[in-house]
Image (cartoon, rainbow, N blue to C red; front, side):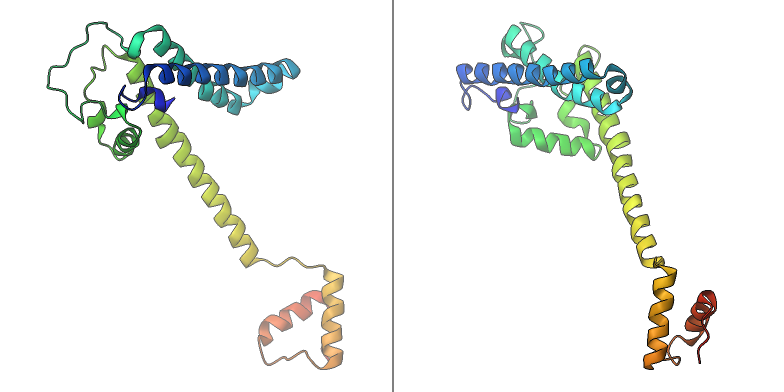
Length: 203
C-alpha cells in the first residue's frame, strides 16, 4: 500500500496499479476469513472487540486502494493547487522514509507534516488523525502499560512468595535435622517460625 504512494520516478503507473489491485485482493481475502468466523459463531464474533480492529485493519487499506484506482493519483479535486511553492517537504507521504518520519514527529506532538491540508475540507484526514491518536496514545499505550504492570506483579509474586507442599517440606526438614545439616545459626528466627508452622520439634 505504501509503495503505491511513491512518485512516478520511483514506481511506474503500471506497477502502482498492480500494488493497488493486490491490496484489494488481499483485503477481500481477509474479509472472507472474518465472514467465515461470523457465520460459524455470530454471537462470539460480535462480542469480541478484537474482530472490529481486525476488520478495520484490512478494510481501510482496501477502501483506500479502491479509492486510488477510481480517482487517478488519489486526488480529491481534479484541479488541486498549492499556495506555497512545492518542495521536498510539501508532501512527506510521497516517500516511505519521510512518511515514517512524519508519523514519528506526529507522535511527539509535531503535526507540521499534516498542516499542508485543510482539515475542514479533508474529513478523511481528520478522521484518520483522530483514530490514529486514539489507537496509539489511548489504547496502545494503556495496553503496554497494563502488560508491563502485569509482568511486574507476576515477578513480584515470584520473588516474594515460595509455594511448597507442607508434607514434603516437613519431610525434608526432618531429614536435614537428622543428618545434622539444619544449621540454626543462620536465619535462626525465620527457621524457628518455619518449625513452629510445620509443628516440628528441633531436638
